[in-house]
Length: 240
Image (cartoon, rainbow, N blue to C red):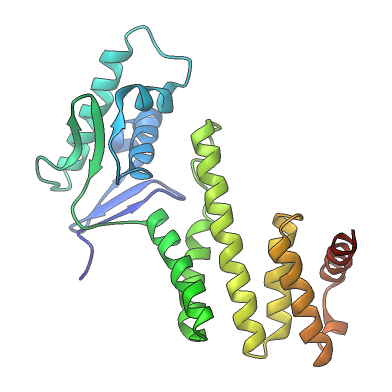
């Protein structure tokens, strides 16, 4: 069943529904975007008013913060109405809490989490084509920037979660490549993970495994020098 709406929180924040699109400018500028993405990353749970205020302004709350938050919420609700999101859906409120409620909505961040779990499960079951497809979906979403011009703590935490999803996806792609005999690709995926996080133990193991398989097939001699350097670094770490 096709989703009723598609919500993109990574890259350019966008909502698509019924052939129409709602962009960042329409949700209320910077503050509206922060409100929408904060609720979108937590849509399974109500968010308290103080939490929402903190997510938007942190400690720099304006003197008329209650009026300001009411205005931002109202503008977001009105914007979602233009896409035909029916009442009481949209931004629902109850006893001082808020929650994003869009029926049958697909959200990219949720899809990335689900896809990487599917990919790892398929890999364990040796369903390589399914693992490859799901890992590519997870990697494609997770590599997108998340609110790149914001440095709030919750934004940084979300970026860290997306980075973990991306690393897990590339490790699946590395493992699938090796099993399919594509050793250079397997080495490259593992090396990319290790470059992003040099202390990722699973990436160290994956890169050593990829090089071991590649050396048996004569691939390692063609491996870029930077990947061989990462392998030597990984081996030194393993000996410590």
